[in-house]
Image (cartoon, rainbow, N blue to C red; front, side, top):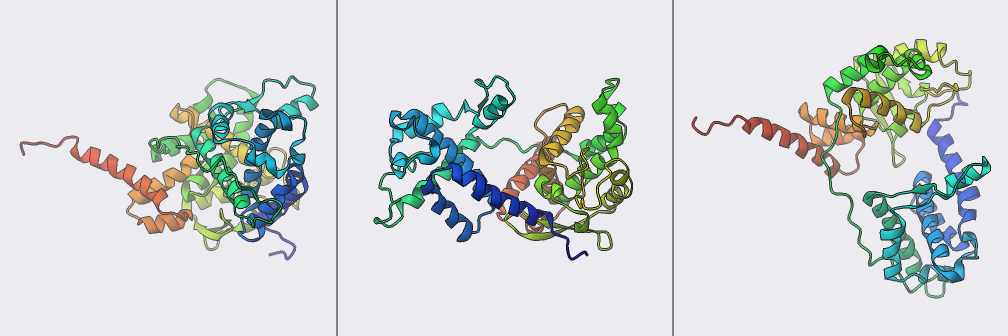
Length: 378
């Protein structure tokens, strides 16, 4: 391997660190900086997680600024630590009940203004699960300042957030893409006319050219259960066809190995040796395994759109994201007789309780089938 080769995750982490410290934190009040430095340097939180925390905190501070008259003329980055103590518990409840269900999308409104477009009606909405994540962020945020020494200039004595309780969305049945559906998706990608019929658009015409790549992506997701973020981060150097393995940088900073089936290996080789070179024409410096039409690394959102497009045509329902392949892998692996511990290791799950939910759902299906024709007279 070339000594100059740098894994994509290292490049991405460096980019995210620069974004956090050079762009995001300067747009927040100065009292936020020690909080993020502690999470970064003492706890080793990933930069993607820290960027998510910063986004949640900025939304909350924007709400404080807009909700209380004394802060309305002050930029967010100029707010002082006392602003955190201004809301009462009833105010914070209003933040979660009335504000988060629909609030201004500042980022896209600014982008729209730059392009001369109307921007006053661009809003965002949070599900109960997303709101619960924001609540967890804010509880940790307040806990940090509440537990500083009293002589610290950023110490606070009032926490209006800790009393708030938020229930996540009730657990719905886990959606999976079963084996027959996966086969139909692959068949449909091979022959787009089966999926799109006579709808001859430029997008469907391009689909015929990118079929080999899309088959490789769907097969790799279904055959390994890897996350879409892990897939788009793969480089050519991460695939070892001699040992039939893929080297992954997992969520949480762990390095791991997954194993390729003969089918998955075959479609990857077909893509690498043919479509990647001919249809995507990467530069000599581009190491990304999967490429976009711009000849650069494919994005997470592009893979999500692609999977949703194909699954919707085959299954006829919305909501089948790439993560459903991960759910399907877990379900099929458990159904094949693998232990929860083995499947947990294959998916790099830190908590086995996640897999127990798949096991329980599969067990329920088996129980239903076993007793469907139960004869009380036999």
